[in-house]
Length: 377
Ligand SMILES: Nc1nc2c(ncn2[C@@H]2O[C@H](COP(=O)(O)OP(=O)(O)OP(=O)(O)O)[C@@H](O)[C@H]2O)c(=O)[nH]1
Ligand SMILES: [Mg+2]
Ligand SMILES: [Zn+2]
Image (cartoon, rainbow, N blue to C red):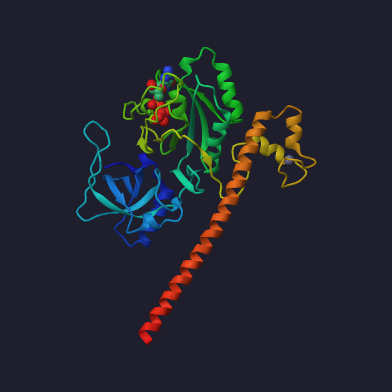
């Protein structure tokens, strides 16, 4: 038997599960989503690992991907008749599931990291749920890209997770101070951990942000060493890692799926490096990555100040005094504009969708009336 507490189970979740079990009358048990494939899920329950499937057409009918299970979710499953979960293999590696369970419900999430789907479509794509802390991993030997960092930050904070900046590959730089300062300036007030995953330096500091029952997620570009960090924290080489490209130090997109691993103390989700990270907000809220700008904005004369031309704008004033770096303000503005544009496109898409459904509804109604006419004649 697996102790669900090692997977992050606690009394509040147990209460939510009991309520769900009462609603679903009976033979369901809790499990955590370890890998989400398209429409099929690997879930870990007390008895071991199952293939979890959604009933009927649930997967195809979902209008918003957030309605579907995502890695990190707690779900209520009903093992199919005669199904037995498989325990861990002798070497401790998690077993591939053989048995099937139906996923009946997703328990309420404490946090959910969401990005905008890649490509033209404006749609939310959940990345991971029930994450306590997001480790945004960057690489010390590449020019740190504060703009990219801000995007990851906005996603993690917007989704309700804490954030730690992990600057990996510190063994490749002679002078640590400027690298760490650059990271700190892109994430004011947040903890920055210096790491060398290959040497094991700083790994304890990362573990300090996890701990029993807590769930972390590794985020960051391909090749920064996320899977190497995971292996170091796990103390075993479970995740494949690959050298970065010699010409430009970029990664090779080695990890291709999001997967949850259980450590001695805590749980950690490894993710593939994202090629493009669009942020997602449900309304055109301010970007979530800019506490410094938010503090200034609170003192603008107008509560709805966009910090463009408005009089009495403290954000612009601070930038003019040199207290707010110009590139940081530019990064803030870019995200703000992007989110406002997304929000407009989303409204437009929702309007079209309404119209389309209206038409389909009218067509169905006409067909029914025609049928009626036939039967009556
Ligand atoms: N010098 C040095 N190399 C490292 C360190 N951490 C990771 N690497 C190397 O960086 C390369 C990429 O590491 P991965 O762990 O595969 O990177 P990743 O972030 O998981 O990449 P994706 O799965 O593609 O997103 C490998 O060759 C690692 O050995 C480190 O601390 N120092
Ligand atoms: Mg990887
Ligand atoms: Zn302002």
